[in-house]
Length: 62
Image 1 (tube, rainbow, N blue to C red):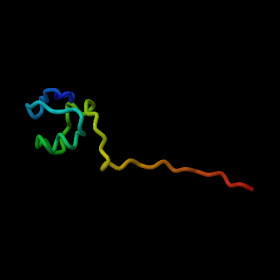
Image 2: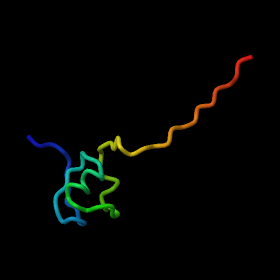
Image 3: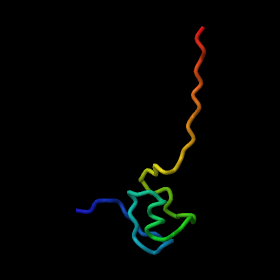
């Protein structure tokens, strides 16, 4: 049984799986680094994308 979400992509003209990252989909469908019309639909987590770490400030004890 295949239950991953998918939809038609107007950019590449193919059905694409939405349980991956936009970067993975672009690599699979050879889209490159272009604006993706389905960008907000992907549910995968891109662990290679670096997010800034919040700076934690500690109070000094006296």
